[in-house]
Image (cartoon, rainbow, N blue to C red; front, side, top):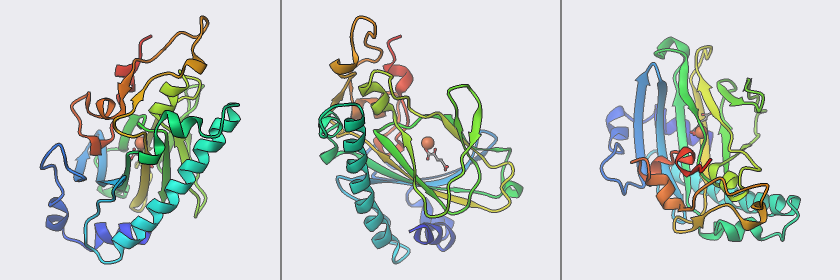
Length: 254
Ligand SMILES: O=C(O)CCC(=O)C(=O)O
Ligand SMILES: [Fe+2]
């Protein structure tokens, strides 16, 4: 799958990729190249569920990604059940609360240049991701940092053939802040070679209203987030659904 993504970036011309630049807020495929001090990243984001949208070139790319997407959905449902059980609730708790069966998934394929070709040290500035959970695979190690609860940046080490799972905004909202959406960033300052990551943002159904579950709210733990559909939360800052940008700050009540 990573080879397919690498072929997309390395075996197509810039003009072939530019076809997927922003055309409309309803785009299902979005490409962008950012090269400035705040961001050094080329990316392709595609809607992956309920329906998969993928460029037809290069050959093999589509098939590999579809297969990975299908397998990841099984992992996501499995994790939803495991987390529900860990919380002491019925197995279907998260699946139902987020309507994951018709969940909105986006796959972001990111290419970061080697440091010799980047403008500054930042690949992607600090942010959280929307959704229930976020899956991440990469071709070479280096760059992704996660903010610890003590406020230190931790370099992530992801062993080869491993999928890193991060928590997303809607899990934080559903649990009224018990689980925190991970703050992370990408640093390219020491990267000798280019790095590719494939990030799956696995979210609720677009029309599902997401708010803190009553199971997490009581006199000692007042409601910390306002209610919004997943779609509203994705577009409230003027972004498009396919951009999958966080709006957690807008949802916060306290
Ligand atoms: O490339 C990475 O390691 C992280 C990318 C990321 O955070 C994102 O696409 O939201
Ligand atoms: Fe992210």
